[in-house]
Image (cartoon, rainbow, N blue to C red):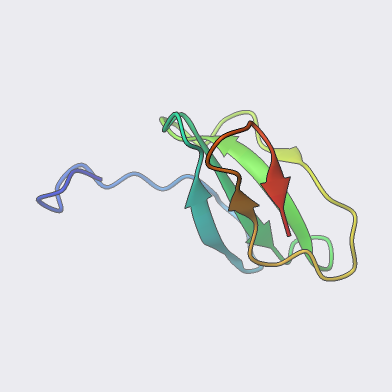
Length: 75
């Protein structure tokens, strides 16, 4: 959504929890935790939620965090 609260866009459609989003440094992707397949983390496109890719297979991969200087994510 825009800073004024308009333009809200749903990026995921999942019966389980999708949350803990974190923006990539370049602002084009969001990493987030999801409980759709136990607890995993995913990466998706900011503009329409497409291209969701599972990026972890850890039993507890909550709180994904982008590195500010590299294109990497820590859990």
